[in-house]
Length: 262
Image (cartoon, rainbow, N blue to C red; front, side):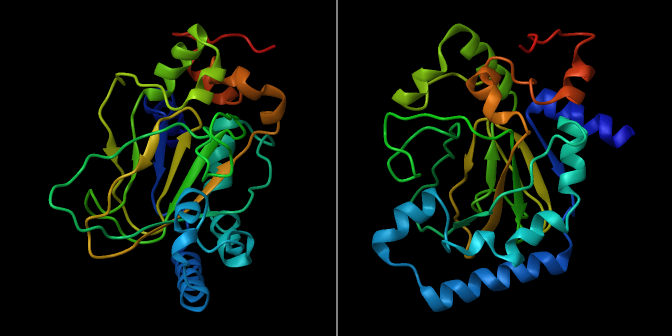
């Protein structure tokens, strides 16, 4: 029970929590082997790289058993239900295969963050469009990341609550104009860890991928997990960010009442 309370508190405070070794090693190896097999057989046409980077590498592979097993053989669904309520998690969809390749530069550059759902023209949505369609990210590390700047999944702690207030004062349609420029409450944190670790991140958390200055490819699989009411709630959950997180709402209500759901 102490661990459950800790992950709920971390989600409220920081907007993310880390599940160490949540995916069995064999499932990680099977997924990475299948990705490498796909790359060796199918290749990556240069013209397709911007779309693959924004959407998924190895198109079509994310729904195959070795990638789906990263969820159904893991501790993730049970942990998520401790955050959004038992019976509220829809079956996980396909994995986004998220690779980050090494880069050689004269000077390192800092990571940049974004909110999901903003159309870029390469991510499956046209520029000028916006949608909100999931409750949280589950980012599965498929290789060890012992240090920063290895293509690490990167988060801006507390930005979920910052943007909750932001969207209580502004209509979410402003995101059709792109990512708002804002002074976020905390600097970015690059997630280090081992293959099999999973980062759970609130849908409202600013996140991104750090540049990869290591000699190796960064391998990750990203699942966008949904509360059963995600479509009904739509953008209303952007100004009431615990609407789909009843266990977290119950944790925080004694000290900070959340907006009531309708």
